[in-house]
Structures are given as C-alpha cells and as structure tokens.
Image (cartoon, rainbow, N blue to C red):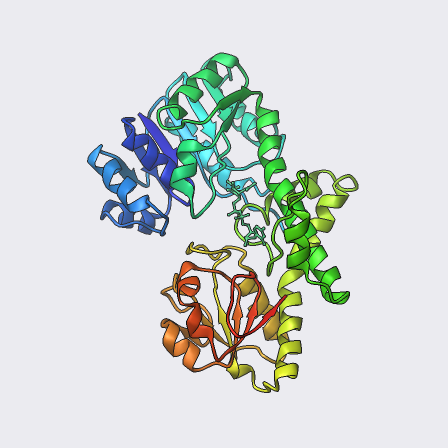
Length: 407
Ligand code: SAJ
C-alpha cells in the first residue's frame, strides 16, 4: 500500500494515477474538510481529465483520510512556500508530514518527498528528524526525492508522458521508487542522488522564470522605443537557436514565482541574474496598471468603474489563484485611486473573493468600457466577437477585436 500525504494540486492527481494503475492507495490530508469532500466523491479543484481519473481510482478502491497509515511506502506532496524575509524555504509542512509518518511507519519503510525543495533540504531538515526518532537511514528507513514536473492545465497527460527524476541515497532504493512511478509513467525516469534531484527541479523552474523575465524586459524596451515586441519575437523565433517566450502580466502560480527565491535565499550574491528575473516578473502587475491609466487617459475613460478586469487565476483554463498577477494588480490598485471600483470576472472562480466580482460574461461586458484581459481562458477566445465595441488591453496577445491595445 502507498500512503500519499497531501491531497493538493500534485498529491491528489498522483494518488489517483497510482490507484488507477492498480496500486493500493490511501490519500491523507490534515484538512478534514478537504478529506470529507473527497470522501463524498467530489473533487476539490478543476483539471482536464481529472474527473475520469477520479472515477477510475474510486473504482479501484482509493480511500481518503486525515490519518497517517502504517505502510511501507509514503509519498509526501505538501506545500513548500518560501519565507518572504529570508527567501529561504519554509520547510514546516514537510517536517510536520515526516514527523507524522515516522510515528506510524514500520521498519524498512521508504519515504519519498515529492514536494519541490531546494538542494540540501533533505540533509538539513529531514535526516535530523529521522535520526531523532531513532531510525537509521539505509538500515531501517529509506529516503528518496521524486520532484513532480506536471503543468496545471495538462497535468494528466504530463503525469503519464513527462520524464522524471528520482534522487536516492542508494541505487536499489531509487530503482524501487522508479518501479512504483513506472506503473503509470511512460517517460524516462532517471535515478540520481538526492541533492542533484533537489537542485534539478528548482533549476527547471528558474530557467523558465528567467526566460519569461527576458520576454517581459524586451516588452518594456520595445514599449519605450515604440517597437512591436510581438512581431520582433515572432521573427527572432524563426532563428534555429532562438526561442523567446511570451511577455505577460506577471508570473503567478505556486511554482515558478516561488522556486527561484530558494536559490536567491541560499546563495545571496551568486544568484544575481535569478534575483533580477524575479524582480522583473514581479514588477509586471504594476506595469499593467500604468498601462491601464495610460489607455484610460487616451480613450477619455475617467471612471475606474468602467474598467473590467477579465481573469483572476494565475493562468489560462485553471482555477488556481495562487500568486495571481491579477490579485497583485488589484492590490496595487488599492494603493492607487481605482481601489475597489473596477469590475472583475473569471469564469473559473465561483466564490466572491474581490469587490465587484461578476459571474456572468455578458453582464460583466455590459457594465464596462475598457476590458483588461489578464488571462486568456478558452471562454474569451471562443467569444472574441463579444469584445467588439469595447476598448481592450490584451496582456496575452490573443485578441483580434477592433479597438485593442497591447502591453
Ligand atoms: N507565463 C508567461 N509567459 C510565458 C509562459 C508563462 O507570462 O511565456 C506565465 C503564466 O501566465 C503563469 C506563469 O508564467 O502566470 C507560470 O506558468 P507556466 O505555465 O509557465 O508554469 P506553471 O507554474 O503552471 O508550471 C511550472 C512548470 N515548469 C516548467 O515549465 C519549467 C511545470 O512543468 C512544473 O511542474 C510546475 O511549474 C511545478 O509544479 O513546479
């Protein structure tokens, strides 16, 4: 049996995938409400293909609980935020999960950490916990790190098809964990040591953050020099060794906007490019806000009540609002004149979480003159003609309507 700890955005699909492929799985979360929801057969977030996978896993007997189970294999998938002051990892969720597991686990159990953690986390925070409780690694307990790589919006496909990395102290433990993941993963699974696996995952997300920051910086340069950044990127990307990403309203989500900070926190003075990229991406919501004011002046729109913000999630076709650029921009607005007055809509967010939030596209559009497209959900792409007659600030370069501005 496998006990997956943490039924969030990564732990839940992983647990379901394992169960659907014949493993006996119990999903544990300390959030009793979340466990109750799963036990009642309801999902806690939306994701392409997750419904079908959930049904299959239930058929195969997956169970959910708030208790930690006695078994020989644990997969820990809990949040790893960073401390806003020091920029270092806040390992408290991982430590709590490991402490809870070792209270119940039998001798010889394998503990796999899936959460993203910077290099040295297992050495500094996990090994001492095992030692204190009398376990001897390699003898009566085993450790591995198997960082996830799936992208929200395409998680199920990527769980099956992405390559994976597994870090372990000993090859045989790495191979044992690899076997478990091979029950569903068709990609290449590379076994390495724990520190390399920790660093590799953080490096992947940092690479993407830096590349998005480059696109955002280019966009600022082109705006200032009155050049068309999108045309420039389109042409430059025809070069066989150039692949510039897309400028946008900022980098959100719990991964790319978080993981590079670990390197800044642990290697101050060395992670300079990484720090600059983080700052560049974090500056984008405020840049969008300045652009909104510019367009309002140009179009003679005086009242912030006539401004509609489309999209609250951190990216398209997901319901995840963690580190969302829109929420950051609304926070900036609170410090400026428009606070609490603009109108907001997102088809994926049913609960009211900000002022003047709409739940119907037509009504939202009726009430605003300037639409700021922060997220390119399929809904708006499929209803582009509804933007005709509006002024649009398209931060994602997806609109082909009449009166449109870009970043
Ligand atoms: N974004 C841009 N321009 C781009 C691409 C993205 O502005 O060209 C923005 C998005 O709108 C979003 C943010 O960046 O706000 C991040 O989105 P994303 O789609 O790039 O990535 P995530 O955070 O959804 O998932 C990432 C993935 N990492 C990489 O691609 C290296 C995923 O594979 C990881 O599993 C995931 O982080 C994770 O959990 O770590």
